[in-house]
Length: 201
Image (tube, rainbow, N blue to C red; front, side, top):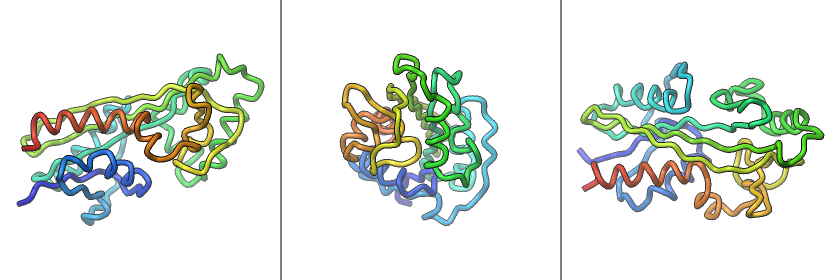
């Protein structure tokens, strides 16, 4: 049976990033949706890492012969005690548009000066391997919450996440540039090295 990587997501934007960064492994990568898995996984961990492991293990039990990757990512805003954190996707309800969510955070930070608007994107990735081992990595990108919604690229909270050294939001960056510096890009590259070292021959 050929080696496959299954990523526990149905998010096509995320899959585009994953394909770009893991392409050189030479192993076909599929979303769980593409291999016909549609299950509700209860993410009741208290950290990004715990939730990523829960997802990876759940899919690995269904596909024990495959390498299963899962991520849990979110936005931490220091002024709001690191909210929304692990609840980023569920903040204001999963079906609420990010235009509304992003505006809500801008409203919460109305009048707050830049030095107190520090924030980061966090991405934890877990890999469940066919031999039963599980590895986790974490990637982050530091920035501040901007003062307006800006940019057409990216997704989620990208339009309000401003990276001062680049002078723009992550939604204003070209996808290649964003992948170079993003939390998910950093975590995927760290996981790629583990996979190259241990499992990809």
